[in-house]
Length: 130
Image 1: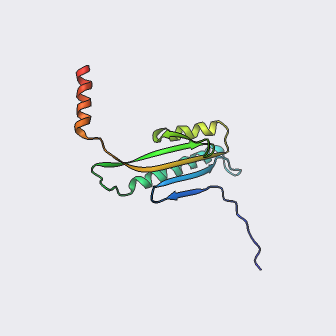
Image 2: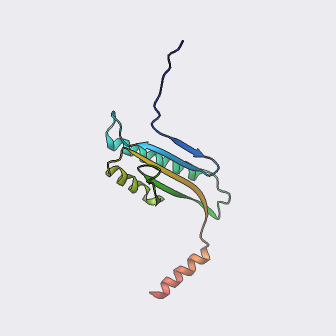
């Protein structure tokens, strides 16, 4: 008989291809690595996921782009909604609070690009005000 081996899973990954959601619990501490290197590895995983999602084909590339809805916190219950551009800063705040784990949820979605005429009209209004 072969002895049973138990393995502790450190991260939970749940990726739903239909909705393009990544839910992951990152360990922010590791006995064998410096805390800063662990944090950089987490940031790298997030950036790789976003890069991979942005490479996927859009239904209409001329009028759409990829956008991301993000949640981050010490756990799924405590996770707060953040703008994608602020995700890395929010991760630093979670680490600074002394948390040993971090929950990250990223939802990739397609968004219509703003119409150029509407953007030009807003820019003209701003220029007229000045």
